Amino acid sequence: MELQNDAEWVIWCKAKPKDKATQTFREYGKCIFEGKRAKVTQDNDNQEGSSGGKHVTRARGWWKRGDVDACAAQTNMQCWVSQEMIFDDERAKTHLREAWEHESGKDEMNVVLQGLEQHFWRGTEAGWLGCYDFAGETWAGDGSVYKCSMGAGSVCLQRPGCSLIVRVGRDEEGVSSLRPELAAIARTLQATPVESDLLYLCDSEAALNKMSRWIGSGLRTTLAGDANADIMISIIECVRARVLRGTRTFMIKVKAQRGEPLNEKADTQAENTRQLSSECQQWTTRTQRMTYEWNDSDGVQHVTAWSKAVRNAMLRGGAEYRVLDRAGTNWNKNFLISTDVGLRSIRQTASAGAQSHLMNKERWGRRCMLQLQEAENWHKPAATTWAAEFLLREGESRECLGSWINSHTVHEAKKRRAKQVITCSFPCGKWLHRIGVRKSPGCELCKRERRKDMASDDALPMETVAHIQSAGCKAQKKSIIGAHNRRGRVAEV
Image 1 (cartoon, rainbow, N blue to C red):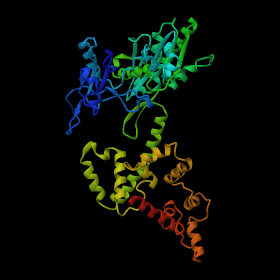
Image 2 (image 1 turned 180 degrees about the vertical axis):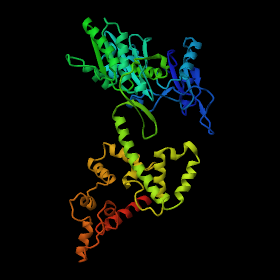
Image 3 (image 1 turned 60 degrees about the horizontal axis):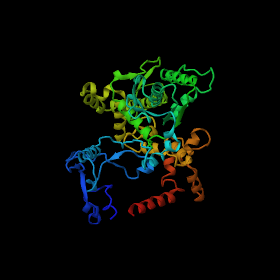
Image 4 (image 1 turned 120 degrees about the vertical axis):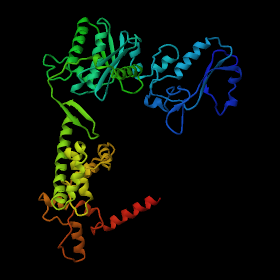
């Protein structure tokens, strides 16, 4: 009855709800728009029908994560208004259709500080800090890095139509997340009038720490050896001019990807800027630093200056080269010298031409290691050690083991034991005998059991990790069999 007597109401609802009979507003209202969601065929993933409804709703539980991603509608939707409402039908339909056919993957983050909507925006992190009521200009900037391109963008609250974008150059020396963040700060300082106070929202703690080094540091602070000295010069000069003018500059850290409207807009600007042509690049002056080309564990090529990633790649490449080279040597001894299998394999591989494994020492070493592992007459490590083979084996549990070791929920003692087992340095009898701590590598548990039975201590099995964890150890036999049987009962359940 309240809606029947009121002409100022708008309802957005499902086109065919289950409780359609109870929705009385359909009797005295009218439908001004119906959005049909895109249908997905069973044969393929191509969408048919209407192109709308792809980015019209928020994800479930978005308020818990600050998620601003726009998701597809799960059903057709309708917009109902009162029959007595006076408005421009064509204009309303156009706006609704544009919203329904929205192509951006993010929700529109337009800050409105009037009416009921102001309470929502003032409840954000920047709203609680009073950033939206700042007397000067409120800006937010962000940087974006993907593959070999860097982009930066910044937006202003007081000037909605003003947005700054810059394609950051010098990517031939490698990319970093810090450089575009500093570029966004530099462009904002250059665009803001010197006589206006500035409040800047940034989600990069590294960029803010970079600037804080120049606050009250004295004459000893220098840009010598700084990889981003070209951008820092612009930032320092702008901040110095503002200090001499007497204007205030505030840099505030906000959380990234938490629904902060200005930060989300700046992030979108930065992502779009990365797609600009190389002719639009700024800060392109090369330095004298040496660059390195290296491939990561996934085979993706990187070109960067010296960094921790380059150091780790060198260590990993050197270790792999040593192991694979030993695998090739062992393959020669087993297949090439004693039999003709090696010659036939070489001829077959060489027939592929320049793309064969013979032209790449790493690929040839891996092939030799795999062939030795499958050989029936080879009972030793195909390369240097069993641990090295496990770490080089693809498609096994190495990735899971790495994530388990890096997990903060796993106790450090368990991590340490796992690393000792993998590196063959677990403090068992064999290892202790090797480093001179124990006189004999024999199993102490088996020795204890033999003495109980009044048996001889001669020819004791070596105390290795495999021996302790197997039923071959007499003292561990009952525990190992019990654990094995218990595992079987759990699997059956």
